[in-house]
Length: 334
Image 1 (tube, rainbow, N blue to C red):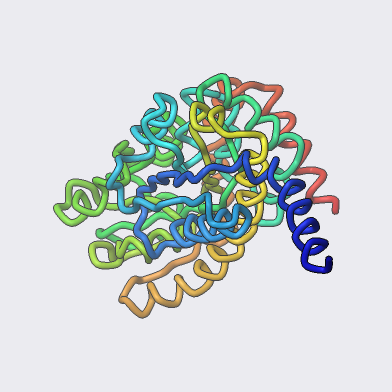
Image 2: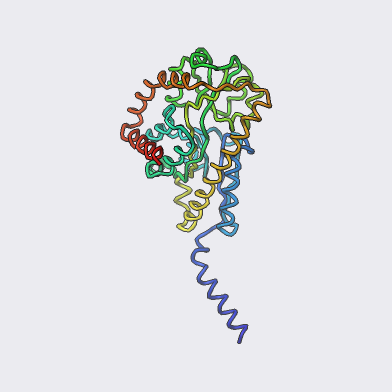
């Protein structure tokens, strides 16, 4: 009798668990990124895979394809829209051609620190941006941190704003970045990230701009001598899934993916900040000469970039710009 009771209880538990379990099929999402497989972004994708497996009883997973093996940010985002790739993590600036409002996140010198960035990206405003993606064939699962961008070059140290003039700098394939560095007197050269190292090695460009974590992980110190901590633009990534993939998931699978993405987002931000703190010391050890712009020179950058901010605030949408500034104001008052 005892055995029958245990068997019955087990059967009842199985019956209760089966509806949700039945909604979860074995799936592995391909995730393409342009960065190396030891970069914090890649580590966060691997963490996302672990979280998916834990939450789904091993049925769901995410397979990382790093170092641009599946393309660059632009081509991989297009592949998601076409349904030939499941996931990628592009810079938010890549999405401006699809949803112009994303551009406000990159307005020069908008953010003062990471706390402000978190407050804005996790606010209703950040969610409103992500909600614009499904009609473009994409689903935004969270904002990951790339970080504050800094300029490197192989020609000379940058000690004042005028030192940027005449440098040929690779920038993201985005009009805001092109206009920003043109306003600072540099020769802004748009180029996919996957082509950047060889372009600097061959002296096709003098330098580039990226956060310290990317500069270290991509070994740019091998072909760049000078780094200035310019903090000219804050850069975020967007964890994306193809809407075609998302729509093929059951409600339970979507729930598990959303939960895993939320936890992976927190992990990514912690990881990249810790890595970034160490990166500066490692870059100095590797022989890079590091300068920091004094407050007066930072003010000159702001002045030179003011026309660019005014122009792109209109282009990206004055309503979105106002919402961004309102969220920043809230964050600064806390």
